[in-house]
Length: 330
Image (spheres, rainbow, N blue to C red):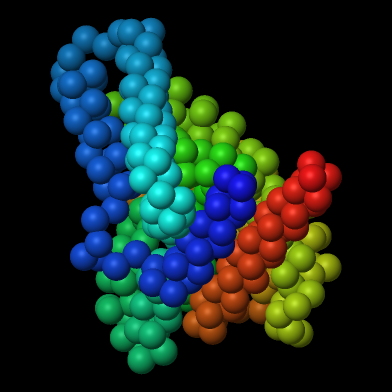
């Protein structure tokens, strides 16, 4: 019975994400987790400018950060779920549905990237640069229309895994406790997992754990993206998506980030990635994909169609596996 409640809540949460996205006014647990990480960062690492550094000690502190955040998030999510189901199964399903909904970002990715699409469609390059700056870390002030479109497409493609399929898999397997724990790891990596002067030692544990928990989901995400090409029309090339995925999926400093980006570039027949400017400095990056044609504004919309196709396949596979397991058990 509990498994039935879980999969019902899983489906309701998935639908809620597609319908509502992440309204700015709604309090979000990821922001709370981020504040916790920021507070621990200041307490454990403190000021590093001009200080004598001990890398071994900083790595140990980084491991303490990961352990403390994960334990706190795990017990918080478990306590909320337990309390809700103790009140009534309906209360448990409502709580679990909301918690599931808050861990998925399908509509949010579409909403933010389509802001860029609309500005480019209106030939408002300044507005498009501002819109894309909200979802990328690179400098956007000098990007042309193609550069802005590429940045938006790359964001959709790269975050298709850690924003949609990865949390979906952890939610399906372990419920909101797994989903919240996964997003805690993801948030730690995004805040302290940098190879810069401040975090290169302190952020090692968070970065390595993020690579580990995303290893399988990133590859499943790419496969789902390639599979979805079969059902999305002639604009999407499944054979080329598979070809570029096989060839370029490791063309990134992260072992996971280029998986879906390569599949997306191949499906659309465009070239993504390449050199980019961060804080005024050019960072050399390899290209992903072949420039079979120029990147165009409409590719942002196409990338979102891939995202949604992949999300529905992900949900469908989770449900199919649950039904098979239930049939075997019963």
